[in-house]
Length: 88
Image (tube, rainbow, N blue to C red; front, side, top):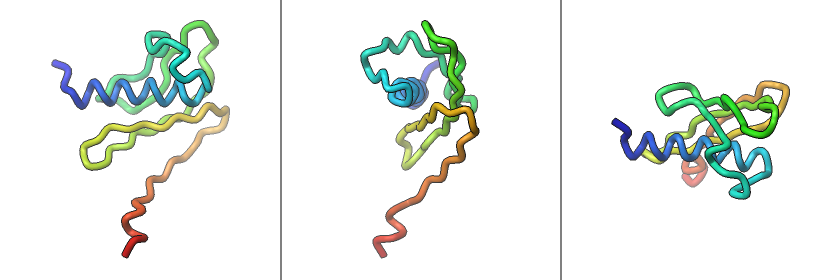
């Protein structure tokens, strides 16, 4: 059974890839295959192109699903900084 959070997790992973490629919503989401929500985020396949090297990370803040993707040959490390810590 797919939960609403699983749906949005899958959606934001695909959206992160489309943004990282620069295609945005000009490309169909069905062109992008990513790992399912219960697995580490990663790009599996990008239809129409050779699948580019990609680093991904999941962002889960207060129950909201998010993801970030970077197209690069070198592995990318991601750090989440809670800006609330700087507001005293």
